[in-house]
Image (tube, rainbow, N blue to C red; front, top):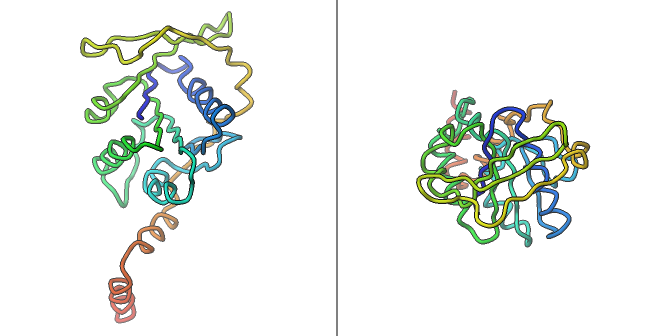
Length: 201
């Protein structure tokens, strides 16, 4: 399942992401993987790394795996040294269709997200943060003549969730770890050829 959360800065996108992660963790006991500091996440790493490792995580965990990616649009602007942004978006699209995978992402506007991702997004939330009442309200929105969000609008009180996350620290891709991951996937014969080529330099 693919869930998008859209809104301007300060609208409560990341808070809603934390709220959804909290429910998945403590109500359904699923595995939580995020690209921002989330105190109850099982794994915190860059979005690029988590996307690469999705198949590995599927083999490792029996529970449903829920990915929480803050500012997906920013990934397209980042330096991608192993995959093009198009390959990353294709990975997200394909892997979000798997039964035991939920991918949740935020973006400031749905047009900042790859067209393919927009088309297959199952649910879209547009939060609205009421600073005075300290509540976040989520209402159905129309997109291309269809409602992405089905059911009744809902709201929650964000102060309870402030303590669980910190977006001040940017989780950057670990280049060495990603290179090591790719090398691990290379067949033994190809590894030997690469080693021989390096030794001959």
